[in-house]
Length: 85
Image (cartoon, rainbow, N blue to C red; front, side, top):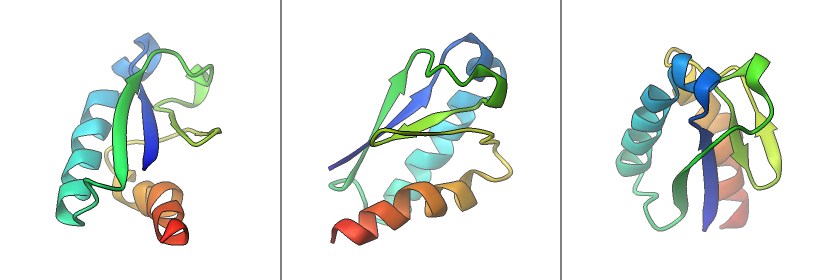
């Protein structure tokens, strides 16, 4: 199972981390990835300037917004899920 941590610290919260979480939950359900991807909230990932930030495995990615969340999910998460199949 791939664990994806979404920062919900102050900076990311203000930049819309809960909206990102909601979008990711929708994508996971749409693509039937409930058994492969686990979303977790995380406090500061140390990437505040580039928030909203997520951590996938040990990599931290930033600049997620509701406008690019689906694209970033495919790029950062779906690629890893597909490579593990």
